[in-house]
Length: 206
Image (tube, rainbow, N blue to C red; front, side):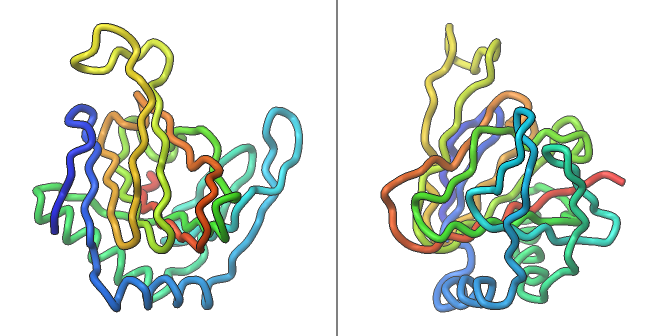
């Protein structure tokens, strides 16, 4: 599987294809049809907002997650997601990265107008320097990255410029240790039609 290094430090790299066809397209349709997609309300800046996408939090029973003032209890693993988790784990293991994922956040974007705002996956439950593996299925869209204030990227004398990581269908983006501490990312609105589902595998600390 070809791998593209987007950043050497902190490590950020993209592998595609991950599953190959027709498996990747079949998985997209299975997840779209069989999961109980939800649109929870989150508190941001003192106000309640319905998230601009649909999501499912899934994982081991103890993998509870707190985000924007809400506690999320995991749905049980869907067999297709379990198989994908094992494929991702094996792919990382082949690159010398040993990790055990006990949870995954699935986001469903019906079209380019649905989005995810600027954030880092740096909640205390994930530990100080988590590794997060994100699988993209469906419409290709760019994940936008920017350096946090005060971070001086390696090889730069000043603040690094924001950049896009285009995530094609059937791809695996690995955000290694240090990415969440140094960078923020967002899936901004784009005039890009088509369904997209992302799965971000995580290790929640008990």
